[in-house]
Length: 304
Image (cartoon, rainbow, N blue to C red; front, side):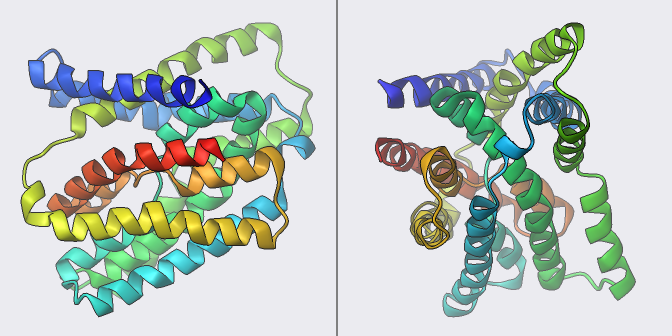
């Protein structure tokens, strides 16, 4: 029942988003507006609320964070090995590399909230507050490195810094950590307001994921999409499991870490690929394949 209760609502909302888009009840403009609202307002506020309203000392586990960062470093290096071994072109390399280690934050919050509750979401909130800046650095650096356009060195540094300083998820997490160390919870009227705002976040995000899924062009990219998806969903959890054991992570923190490693690739790779001259079609195909394959993997993880 735990698996059904955790994954079924996520599947239903993603499928609903898919069919709403296909039926014409939602369109590209609606999905783009929804994405902006979730990314810039609702999701950062939810992270701030979840982290800021909890005890900072009880909501962080440095062994978990170090294990995740070590696994991310290995996956980053492994993606480069695959690029060389499989002779992936410069145009596709940036999209492929991102697919190997970027994670779908929205699905992670939905699954952890359903399966592990408030304690799990506190661990996850602090974890992604640390992981997201590092992932942005390596992803943008990789995209710039393989970019087919001539970019000046000073522009490369500026792009990386801008992505970090303007990331609303990072800002929401950091402000939440600062608030939790400075104050003890929220006044009721603020807590109730943030609670209502947060209720919009996950449904809108999951509907948007379903609406952006497409089968167009998937046949052309199926070999690389499968390689990227299997790297993300098989190698990442296995490597992550080893580091969690190595760092002695256990209990709820261990469960949060394993769910983190088994999440499908982030829909953000499409946006970055299209903006930074990489293969956006490959990114879209990988998002679809990774999302579909993630459900049996996540089911297995939740059974552990």
